Amino acid sequence: MELYNYLKSLHLIFVITWFAGLFYIVRLFVYQIEANDKPSPEKEILQKQYKIMTYRLWYIITWPSAVLASFFAFWMLFFTPTGNAWLQMPWMHVKLGFVFVLYLYHYKCHKIYQELQNDQVKYTTNHMRLWNEGATIILFAVVFLVILKNAINWIYGVVGIMLFSILIMLGFQFYKRIREKSN
Image 1 (cartoon, helix red, strand yellow):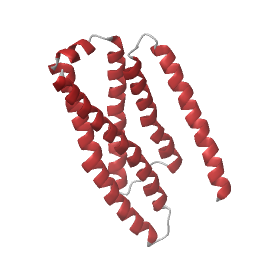
Image 2 (cartoon, helix red, strand yellow):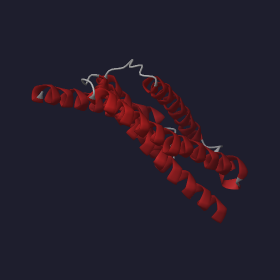
Image 3 (tube, one colour):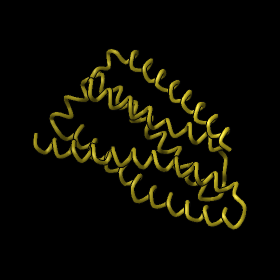
Image 4 (cartoon, one colour):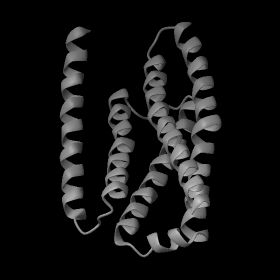
């Protein structure tokens, strides 16, 4: 049991740093896209700096955190008696579904990262600001599932996440209008 608590602690630490990296990388994408519209030489100076920052964040914090969070989760689930019990519970299946979505989100962020490193700007800053909320929604879903350990009411959870998403979108639209008025 003591080993399990150490594993759980390490898993949680790396989940937190993984999410921190995902939250910040998309914010850096916004800044990198905004820098693309600046005049020279400001554009080149900012782009160079943002490329360095995103590289360091992505490969020194975010990717290692994702790998280590997954490693400790795998260890807990498949090599401890407690983990085997968790795998029998329906809420864990739902949680693992959200974790799969998180991997897809991470993969898409990696693709966007590669594009921006190659000076390919395919998205607007508004798109990236909305994209940034994806990790927030996944985080909310996983935390509530882990704390409440209840997959039976997953319909209420999905409705709650959808309402939360709508609130985020409305907040985004409100913030966008304020930004446009101040410019």
